Image (cartoon, rainbow, N blue to C red; front, side, top):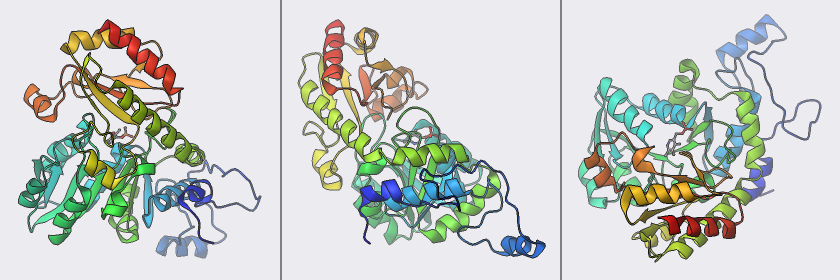
Length: 391
Ligand SMILES: *Cc1c(COP(=O)(O)O)cnc(C)c1O
């Protein structure tokens, strides 16, 4: 029977043991045993889809999670990784070699920039960074020898939106793969597959866990890449997810849509309520009318994720007075938690960027990134408004 996406979040990938357990089993085992020496030999020649050898290569709990999340996102398969960065690093290392050219959007998560600019460059991969919101810049940068392009569908922390279908068209015309880091878009509102991206990389630390507990990641894509070069690199280099994380994530997927839809509604409502506030220079949420690219954002997705940002007049001092006056909202650097979090990117997550880079990316001293949690939105709004009095 045809199953809708939401049903697949609850039932997708489930494999029951001979005991018929209701809740997915956690297989906390490193290894597997074989009936006979011949069976062991056969499995090492070629392991079937549900045959396992060693937990670094794969494990039944991890497999259930891979099938559930990658199927939900519309991809053929996925490889579950120890963190979002294990997934980003694994995908990039598995798919490039010395002499290749890579084009990436400049507005990237700091650790992604490190892997591209430091690690790949050391192995002879040429990386060109561009303004990802500029369609012409992609056309100019992608060449015949470009192996892949890498981008964040919605950038962190300024929430710039990339025209993903256009990037895919430009890249595919030159035979390049499109790798999309989908952390901000969220799995619920991801449009990576619909716009034609070859690979979606999910930091499952964010909305999949959603409750600030586990680190995890997944590389989703066509079977030929996932069970080919990506699995080969991941299983031999040791970045696999552990079974306990996979089990926690499986259970968390059951509530993913309920949580993320509520958080996105909260983010939109807060953007609407704060827009035009006298203490703010601007408010940004991708699908809100005050965002310069809201039409593009709305054409790509129903909602713009669970994070908004705003710029407080008076720079760092005013911004710190605001942060220190918050009573419910917590000061932290993560996002996509059930608890609402305020981040000051200029002094924390993006502190190490040189000033000129901060200027290019719009990371001003007054910028606050707000990750909306699962509290009553009215309480969060009251807290933000009273704290803005102090700014
Ligand atoms: C958080 C994040 C990552 C890294 O994920 P981890 O699970 O922390 O390793 C990568 N890219 C983006 C855009 C992120 O927000």
